Image (cartoon, rainbow, N blue to C red; front, side):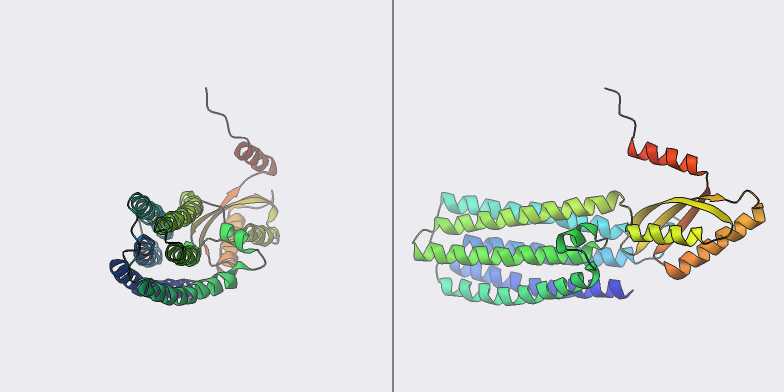
Amino acid sequence: MAKTSGSRFVVYVALAGNLGIAIAKFVAAAITGSSAMLSEGVHSLVDTINEVLLLHGLNRASRPPDRNHPLGHGRELYFWSFIVAVLVFAMGAGISFYEGVMHLRAPEPASNPTVAYVVLGISLVFESISWWVALREFRAGKGRFGYFEAFRRSKDPSTFTVLLEDSAALLGLLIALFGLIAAQALDMPELDGIASLGIGAVLAVAAFLLARETKGLLIGEPAHPEVSRALLALANRDPDIENANGVITVQVGPNQVMAALSAAFNDSCTAPQIEACVARLEQGVRESHPEIVALFIKPQTPEAWQARLHALEHPPQPAP
């Protein structure tokens, strides 16, 4: 629950900042006629919509399991995070590219650029605050891993989505600022359009990274290896289990995991003893790893488990 609360706080901070920044950018774009400012306004508007979708996904994902969703609704957050990635590319990058091309075809110098500079400066301050909040939350959960590795391993897209969006926003603001300065200093309004193209490129890269990570979570990724190791250790300590062969895990939500344990029980165990062993394992998992929402235990010989692993590592090739 604490992790979810932290994620919501990050999204709320980003939502409040982006909404105010989007309004200011659109006003500045209308006054100055700057293509880069208009692209930045669209960028902030898309980010605002994205934060609303992430909050919706967090609310939907927190619902308890029911008859139609026995493993819970955790993947709702992954679905809406993927929609966010699509919006960043389609609306943010697409409109920025369009604005850049149109401004290059019919370049016009920005009027009253001081307004744009003021808005960009204020935006940098607010985006930096939002970025720092997201970075602090992300860093608190990344452990010993580097930032990129932690991004690849993260199972909570709400935090890394806001962090990546804010990073792209800061870079986009700097591009817009340098584009306006260069266009004014060199009397080349085309540079304003080039800045819009640069902003579009930044958003396209951010959208690609978000889509790649959320796609893996959406279709099913294994949980962190630590979960499997802990479950194997717990099973091997039970006196009725001769050998815990292995575990298959699937992340079904930011804090929800489904696990399947392959175990060889002692030959002397009776059916009631096996049932009692399974009950002990389930109780131990509930106490030590509450994120495991479903545990399935399959009696299996080590040879059968190894054959299953071999089939997973060497899937049959489709016929030509």
